[in-house]
Image (cartoon, rainbow, N blue to C red; front, top):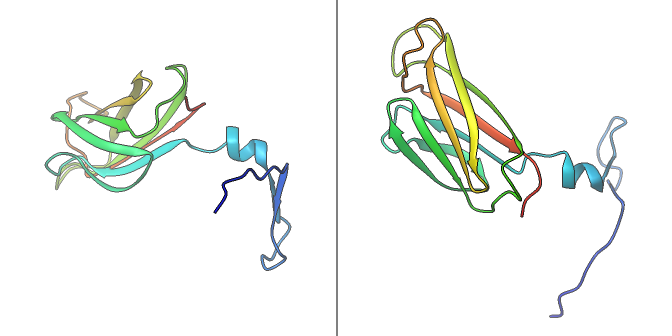
Length: 135
């Protein structure tokens, strides 16, 4: 089988989707969608990923400290990461902070803490996504 190239500017549905959104510009797919994401349990040993895209592995660096190691690297470290977090290991309110930094083209650092005290903690629900150009 020969490998080739398919070129197009817009993807369209065959009409089986109801509503008005039946096509998407390929620029949105290339530039507007997340290039990686992960939902993980920070209270589990090794920060266990529940679901992910473009994630090679997780590193549990200590209480509330995690590194998301990417399969495919970003072109640089000037990209955007978005996060959310909830629930301490088993008890407490959902008053959590999660901060995220793209520390290298292939790694995203996350830190979860109690919003009131600032103390780091292992949260059960953590979500990280990042947007930018892949290398």
